[in-house]
Image: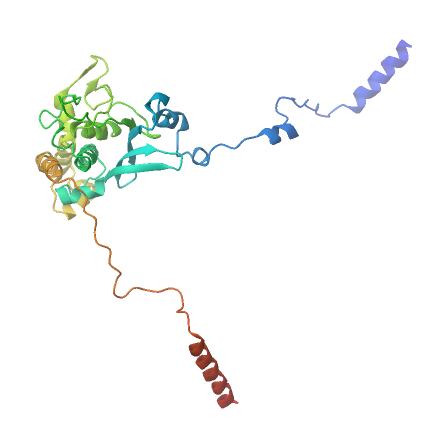
Length: 315
């Protein structure tokens, strides 16, 4: 009866003494066969962390009542040494780029170094806009903003003329904080004459407390004034660090202290001739060939004959 039950309980207790109690496995974490059968992998570019499909869907889908009208996006991307601005539209077969501009093109306009800073990004956006409008014959109708670069600008449709070219800003995966270089490219494109819906809240110089834009600060950033001030301060206080930090400017004989003055000439040169001229491709005279030349039947026969003669001679 009770005594035997108590005895059995004590025996079990003695047997389990010192043993760790096994944890009960939760059914929620158990991955069954049906879990793996139904598992769907994400898109390749999502797995690689390259495309934000939530944003892309909204930038590419066009209203049904607009039929086959293209939905253009102004894409801005950054690498360690380059700024890339492109105007793209999506098709089922793939994206089509109709115009592009790169900051490595800026040296021919007079900006020889510092090709990834705020000023270079603005110039690249301006170059892309002017190149696109020139391509479609809208460059004279919509000249954009040429004075007071610090003021926010919105292009207005000209009377009895074609409407301005409209596209939407595609920032990719970059953090869209106030003062980000992405918005320098946007400002350049807008000043170049493109119609991109925006406001001034993310430009450099926007005060979050006062909720207002300081045009002088923004213009200083656009013309590289902040870089010039930093370079001047460093040259006076730490000449060795200056020589190392601005080595590319010095190598190109392009004074960072005079960047603000140089930028005015750069922006004028971009507006004067934004068209990209393709270089004629020519095959180099002493082109290297890594694969062995394919021999004819007669050549192979002659080689074999020479080999056999060499073997006989050695024997």
